[in-house]
Length: 224
Image (cartoon, rainbow, N blue to C red; front, side):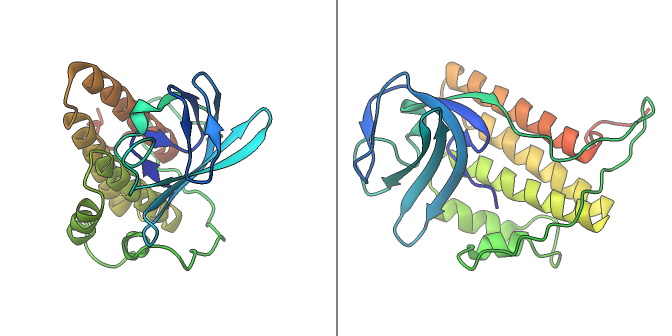
């Protein structure tokens, strides 16, 4: 599953806001920038890993949740500014008639699920069970006790949407789409200030627009 750490997302440009040194001794300074090409969280070590592609090459940063200062889950906004989305198109969209509502069916994925995948990542990729995975949501919220968990849950449902798209199951893909958008709305709603609310609302709208592009139309809009 493509992770989301706080506001950070893969294939987005980031700029360092404050100097810091990561757990491995790599230092970055305010003003440096690059593109996030990998995000992951090691539950055993309680360690966040961020891979950033820069003009000088790729770097792999590690941050411990046990740290009292510096970048870590729940504090990334103080150190990284999220910039433009440079996600490459996942699907070449065919011609659409005005107002046509037709779901895109991507090619099947051949990449096997990594053995290190979390229980909820595996549950999210299972076609069994209900549309809303309430047990998985609760497990994620217990593990990640900060605002970024809402966007992580949204991304989980976005992955389920893609899975059902590949299977050609439009009703369940629509249900996952709506849950993903709903959780990003929750993410924006958890803002604690006007400025943060504006930033999170922008992320929510970008996320929604990206899903519509992948899906082929917006299932939350009433057809005329």
